[in-house]
Length: 308
Picture 1 (cartoon, helix red, strand yellow):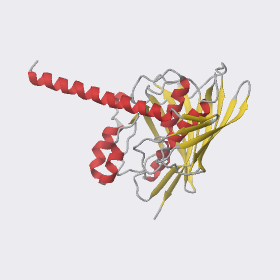
Picture 2: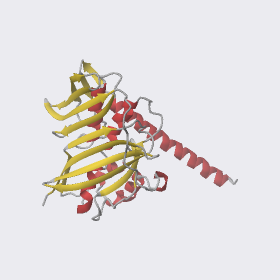
Picture 3: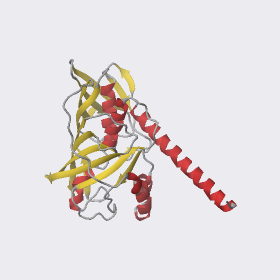
Picture 4: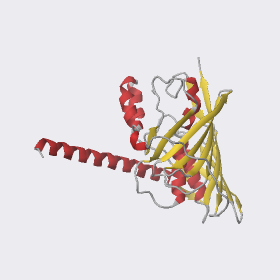
């Protein structure tokens, strides 16, 4: 092997290891983000990352609220949650999560969580927990789509488009994230065309090595589930979040956990939007593991206004 080839091989090796290290750091930052501080019984405090932009990411609040609820139960896992976004979150100050232990039954435990900033509710969540139980089981089939290895990483797509964006948006647009995403039906983010209100996305937490506890993987998936889902109802209108006339925000979010999974393994997120009207768009999603097991379903309605 020539010296030049050896040098290139070394450079590639160090680049891959550097990227892997960066992604691992991002995942650790996500786990740290979800690791709330307990202030008092039923009272927790969470923070936003330093690179938050304008408002708190909705998935962060869902994930942190589920962590707060989970800290008040034992020997059960979440099977469903329902949440409403009431006000934009301020990333410059902590978020206080107050948990109401609504009910502790033999089969189910219910918790209500209120997220507070500046003395006002910004978000509330109801979650239900259940011990492991056997019962009747069925599921829909996973669509036949290309594997994630055959698809372009989302960040590569963003970097290729960044030069066409105003400079103040480039860092936010291309920043490294704790979640890897690969679109099965990618669109041009700068020039979106009218398409069907459906999409499939492979995603996973950026690096392997997460703890085994299922509850942690549920909280990470809660964070991840707010990514891309609201985009689905915009597809038939040729609009996305980069449109300066668009006002887009999550209004509510619901999740149903069906089976165990690992958030650091590739999962297929299938999405569809049956309707939009009245300045709102409705979206549904299903999450499958690579072997076709349906592990979670979700729904979200979002505000989608186009201003003149």
